[in-house]
Structure formats: structure tokens, C-alpha cells
Length: 525
DNA sequence: ATAGGGTTAG
Image (cartoon, rainbow, N blue to C red; front, side):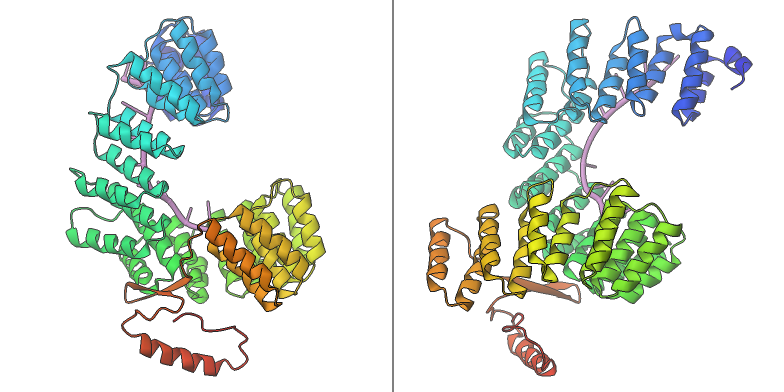
């Protein structure tokens, strides 16, 4: 940078210069010149430097803070915000204490950032205590921050209490509570808050729809989507359409998803990175892998998520070799693969029992890409080994993994044991599953069916008693399909659908077509 | 003048 420029520019010009700088190197240069030019005595200039570096290099920001003779509340707020974005979140409260020792009064902006540094419920309670103690410092930002963080730590009752007792609230506070309720399974409460809201934004609708999706209430999500389109008050925004598209993929709602696709084409959004990736995922999940490939080919910009979605789509649609080849292409000329890409390519190996290839990829992942395998990667390996009958090796891997096995790991292992009739190992895995997931009736049923198959009736009775004793909810299994925008849900032995007779006729035809099918009983009725 | 909140693909 030209020294004379800095020397002669006025303060607003200086600030504009600072806003333009995009790297820490540029900032350090400006900082050095600020000192040489004697501009460091203007506190708002150093404050601006500090605020900028706090979000990209917190240690550098801390050196600026240490060099500042009289740090202001602005400096502390920036520092606390900076720490909230790092892994050293506990420094937030330490800085706050230091600030209070220096007799600096917090202001309305201090607490939302301080709340962000709370990494557990006890630190949140501590901060909330401070807020109450100081009094007179609340506003809508603070209310929503408290609601979000309480619900994040599963203290939804406290979140509701903050909402009810707080006079400062607006559409954001209501939306925060809606999200909190949905994330804690309180669907009715979320609906109540929405119904009673004085005004609603596009984000409020988004929160409702994604909340329904997370709670697997897909019909309600689609209902809301239609309600929103009909009311014409709020326009569906990007994230809302992305959420709906995810929901469509999850339930295989081809028609609704296709309508969104057409709408995206009309709005010239179809080449958008996120929409493109979402569409690839959606069409893959609906089984239209050609359409997914077509979108992938025509996307002008693709990132690691786009490639991962495509590899996963191919892998789950039986195009395993294409998936693995696409992954190889990616390592040659695409973005750097991440942990999710590796899950996708391991799934591709899984569906073709490519055990050696999978081990090789797992090694590559660590050595070449520096990615530590997570529980999902081990899960893929266990699944792969178990399916291919290498149950001993699968068991050894479960014991050697650096983390405790979860339901998915034992589930894969059990599945492999059942395929290969390894009764002793299956029993072991089944018991682990029941203990990990004691409320899930399905876990008991799998083990009970296995006992029944081998005629070990005392095992069946024992499990039945255990279920009664533990009051396990035995909601029957269900399936669903979307036709013309309506999701039809079917339970096992369900006779409630108005066209149940027609459905049975179709099922009969299908069963006759697949003569070699070894499925044990009807798919769903 | 500088600092804060809600939805979001894999």
C-alpha cells in the first residue's frame, strides 16, 4: 500500500479502505501504518481494526486489545463475538469478567454475543443471572438469543418461560421459539405460537415447514407449503424451497418436487449451486437417476456437496461403478473430497461388496486427505464386512473403533448376522441394540423374530415380557407414497385406505410378476 | 461512525 495515501486520507476514507481489505495480511499492513502515522490514538480506528480481526484471527485481535490502553465496550463486544466463533468459547466469559473488573458497563449488545459463547447450560444460566441482576438491558435481540440457546440445550421450558415473561418480543422471537419447540418435539406448542403470532415472515413459514419435516410430519409440511402459496402474503424464499425439496426427496414426493423444479426453471434458478445440488439429491432419492445425472452434467458450477450428492445418488441407485469412477474423476479434476464424499463412495463399495476397495479408500481418506474417519465411515465398513459374511472382522472393527458403537453400527452388524444365519452373534448384537434404544419396539421385534425362526420360544416370551415391563410403544411399522401432492401413509395390516381393495389387487399382480421374490409377506397394505 | 437474533442442500 502507498504510504502517502494513508498519510493524507481522512478518517472516513480510512474506514472505507479498511472495509475493502479482505485478508489478514492486508489488515496487518494497515495496522502497522496506523501506528506509524499516529492514527492509533483514534480509538474508533483501532476498534475497527480489532473488530475486523476478531472474526478472522482472534489471537491477533487479542494482541490489539492488549495494546489498547483504554478498551471500550465496543472492543469487548467484538472480542467476545470473536471468541464465540472459535473453539475457545470459555474465553468469552473470562473477557466479560475482565471487563467488569475494569468497571466497564455492558450494553444491550454485550449479552447476545456473550450468550453465543455459552457452550453448556450452566454457563447460560450464569449469563442469564447477570442479565437479570443488571436489569434494564433487555431488547428483542436478547430475548431471541436466550430462546434459541435455551432450546439448543434442550431447556425448552426455560425458553418458553423467557418468551412468556419477556415484554420485548417480535417476529424473530416467535420464530426462534417455534424452531426451539420443533427441535424439542413440541409440535403442538410450535403450532400454537405460529397461530398466535401478530405477524409472520417468510422465515416463520420456513421454520414451520422445516420443523414439520424434522418431526417427520410431511403431510403437514406440504399443507403449509400450499397454504403459504395460496395466501400470497409471503413469497417462498430460497431456503424454504430447499427445505421443501428435501422433504420431497425424503418421502419420494415426485410431483411436488417436479413442480418446484419447473418453478426454479421459470425463475432462472435451476443452475444455482444449492438448488442444483438439492435437485440431484431429490431426483436420486425418487429413483430418477438419469434426471439427476442430467442436472449434474449441466451445472456450470459444482462444489464438493454437488459431487458428493451425485456420488451418493449413483451409489444408492445401483450404479456403483459409475459412482466410484465419478469419485476418481473428482480426485483428479474436482473439488477436494470431504468426510461426506467418503461416506458416499463407501456406500458405493458396500452395494457391490468391494471390501478391498473400501479399505483402500479408508486409508486414503486418512493419509491423503487428512480426514479422520467418523462413526458413519466405520458404520459403512461394518455394514460392508457384515453383508459380505466377514462377521468376525466386523466385530473386531467394532471393538477397535475409537468411539463407542451406536445403533446404526449394531443394526448393520445384526443385519449381516441374520443374512448369514450367525445366531450367536446376532443375539449379542440384538441385545446391545435393545439396550442402546430401549424405547424402539422394532429392535425387540427383530430379535424376537430371530428367536421364533429357530424355535427358541422362551426367548420370544422373555422379550415380550421385557417390552411390557418397559412399556415400549408398539406402534406398527408404516410406509408412505405421494400421489398428486398427497402423501398416503400405510400401516402394517392397515385396512383404512378408501381404495384398499384396488391396492390389494395391484399388490397381487406385483407379487405374481416377481416369482423369484423371497420377501416374507406383503410389503404394505 | 465501530458490535447482536430466527429458516438453509450432502
